[in-house]
Length: 118
Image (cartoon, rainbow, N blue to C red; front, side):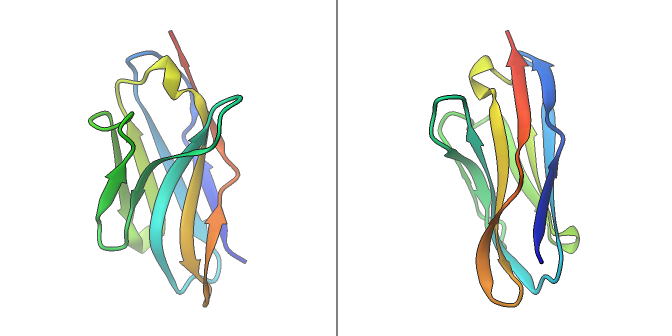
């Protein structure tokens, strides 16, 4: 059984930084795209950033220049470095990954709360 476990959320003041981590565990044959989504109260879940197995990245316009996604394939882990945080970044952040075990399917983490105080 594959699990995605996030860590690193918390409360931070506007302008501050946080680093989220998401580790995949279980019987893993390979991982394709890994990404981070977020969902604020009353809003739909949205894609924040993602990275392919080859290292290509995508960022939502709202976080470009402030957030950096990276991955460590040896550790089956994806990171999200969040700088210059704004109150509108407050949300539950979810890890997402396409994991082969051995057949590829999409998995979600349980979510981690990020709260930015102004």
